[in-house]
Length: 235
Image (spheres, rainbow, N blue to C red):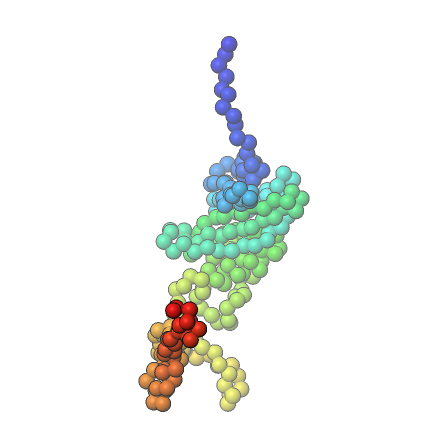
């Protein structure tokens, strides 16, 4: 009688099976990693697929057009900054399949100078998200012809979420009533940064003249002796 392996095999979760299917259907070497994260007993988790930067467009087309996946909607695109890495930025796409009621998070890495392929031709809503990632992080998107500022002011220099500029900014804006126009000027701090002791101002002011009686009122009342009935009970 031949020996058989009786070790039970654990069935894959639907998300893990989806990750394996995407890896198998994608071009050779396009998928670097596909795993289910944040899995708990009460939640199925999230499928995260990491791609080579050069394979973004073919894989995204496959995810939209292949009936096994049918990710018809791009719900969000955002950037993540890891300043200590050589490729400090990650571009994150959150995709939704209404047909299969599934979601997938696709991630690729890049640096300050290397563009990532735009997916605006696949999902037109991506234009808005790519403009936001460019404005906040300076991430370049190849094929995106509308990389205008979206959240910062006209003429803003730099990218706020890189945190490579002073907290006070470079310029300040005010309305000049004499010139009757909005004026941009270098930042002028009217006062230095103050240090706070986090105490209530009413608790901190204890030396003002005339407040002596106020502080006496804060003293606890004197303890009263036992009443007559209590004295009788003690006897």
